[in-house]
Image (cartoon, rainbow, N blue to C red):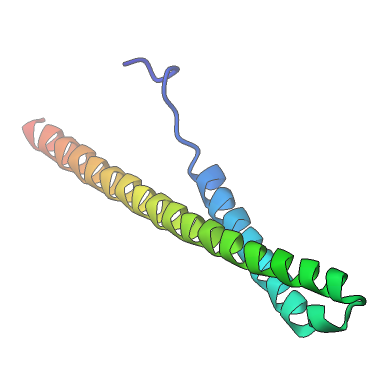
Length: 105
C-alpha cells in the first residue's frame, strides 16, 4: 500500500479526543444549569409543563450522547495506544536490524 493512500495524524486524533471531552463537559454543565433553574418557576402552568418535558427529553438525549462520546473516546484512546505500540515495535526492529548490520561489517 502506498504511503499516500493511508495516513494517520496522531495529533489530530488527540485533538478530536479533547474536543469530544470538551463537548461532553459543556453538555453536562448545560444540564446542570437547567436543573438549577426549575421549570416550575418559569411562568404559566402550560409553559412550566413544556419546559419540564423539554428538560426530561434533553436529559435522556444528552445521556445517550455522553455514552457515545465516552465509547468514541475510549476507542480512540485504544487506537492511539496501538499505534504507539506498533511504532515502538518498529523502532526496536530497526534498531536490532541496524545492530545486526553493524556486526557483520
